[in-house]
Amino acid sequence: MDKPPSEPTILAWARLIKAQARALQAVEADLKAEGLPPLAWYDVLLELKQAGDGSLRPYELEKRLLLAQHNVSRLMDRMERKKLVERKPCDADGRGQVMVITEQGRAMQKKMWPVYRASIQRHIGAKLTEAETSRLAALLQRLL
Amino acid sequence: MDKPPSEPTILAWARLIKAQARALQAVEADLKAEGLPPLAWYDVLLELKQAGDGSLRPYELEKRLLLAQHNVSRLMDRMERKKLVERKPCDADGRGQVMVITEQGRAMQKKMWPVYRASIQRHIGAKLTEAETSRLAALLQRLL
DNA sequence: TAAGATTGATGTTTCAATCTTT
DNA sequence: AAAGATTGAAACATCAATCTTA
Image 1 (cartoon, helix red, strand yellow):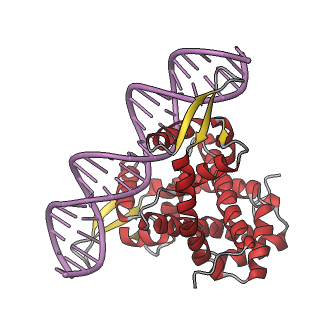
Image 2 (cartoon, chains in turn blue, cyan, yellow, green):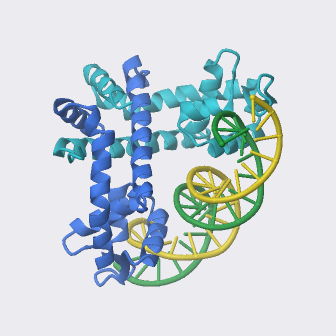
Image 3 (cartoon, chains in turn orange, green, purple, brown):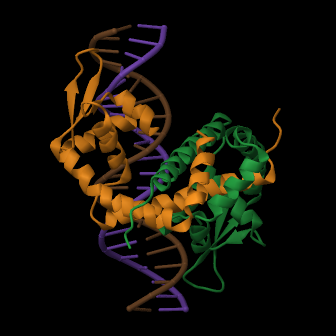
């Protein structure tokens, strides 16, 4: 136990951090260049849209987006101010809230996707062959 | 042009973001649990230590760490307050500064490494075989 | 007591502007 | 004018409580 990581392990770690940082910064920059909100907002909108009735509890968003509870709370504040989501009381649990995507929220998700998609292609797709992409996806899944 | 990304490309992107976020959060938590500073500080200390004379210009750190100039500036403020680095004037360029690692900085780097190393092993090394780790490192390099 | 969610205070990052030297 | 670096103000994230209902 406490066996130290091999050299390839350290290299994989370093490149995971760096490749993600580069790609994420590039995609965020592409969104901003189009005057669109940050990626986190897209993630929220997509999760809500994909949830059956366009709504999720904050703690569900929390788990899916790997965010802390108080960060979800404030992210919802900002998105609610822009009318992209709405808070509703939760029938089933008096403590809880339900976050619902609005029509404006759905429209924003639709508007962001082509820009986001092109950005993913530019910064990931264009750098790997199809076969490499599949192998990368498979290996990354083993880390989840 | 503007060919949309394939399904595997989108999957690889999503997993890159998620796997990195998970691993990074886990490693940061391990460091914090030991009462150590965040990873960014380790990165600075290591870069300075590895630079020939233990010093680098802020703009060099900026490029190596993928940080914005003003973020480097403030990171250096915090680390200087803790006596881990020192600002010196730059002989060769009157506009510039030189950031130098202190003895305390070297000691901190040495103290952090075993914790960091064990954390990398736990969150990356233990989840993949040696062969997988090498393949992952090779694929990630293609993104850089 | 614990889960779901929020909030005040504090720390960090970002934006836009500034300052100095090249 | 451009490069290296910093700074005030605003946005965002984090920490430690707090509040409510289960």
